[in-house]
Image (cartoon, rainbow, N blue to C red; front, side, top):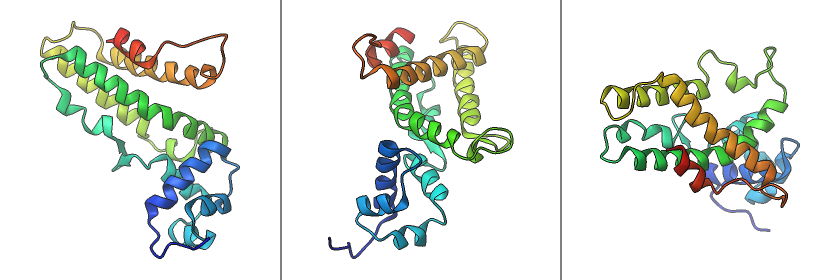
Amino acid sequence: MARPTTIRDETIIDAARAVFLARGIQATTAEVAERAGVSEGSIFNRFKSKEELFRAAICADMKDGEPEWLRTLEARLGKDDLQAELFDLGMAMIAFFRTIIPLQMMAWSNAPEANGLPRHLAEPNPPPLRSLKRVVGFFEAEMRAGRMRRHDPEVVARTFMGGLHATLFTTCFTERTTSFRCPRRSTFVGSCT
């Protein structure tokens, strides 16, 4: 097969994500190179290791380390229809979780730090904690504005995010079975909001 004259990082990252999702962490950089239509050397010219490539695949849909739903969170504050904003936010979070959960599970199982966490989660303020804090702030602001009943905003944020995450997590395991069906994602999110 002819090699492309210009190799884009996005091509390699997209191929890596697809290969890691299909084969797991045991996938090889040779498989990624084949899928991307590049040489294995081209991968290592851009990424120092398979782990760095894997991390790039995890973060592919993030800008400055944040998923789009988190970058747009503050813009949702004070909108006319809070329920519609929460529904849209929940659906965006589910779409993000649908990709990130399998990748995070692979990262967790591969060479954790001494504290049992993958390297990118072992830092003092890891991405999931930063996301939680921002969602807490969102709910707190909506409560202060009188658009939601007053509750502990951290409990509300953890319940909202945790429900979405748990539903997606169980869906990953049950979507191919006929003995147990999870509710449609939009039905679940609508019921949460």
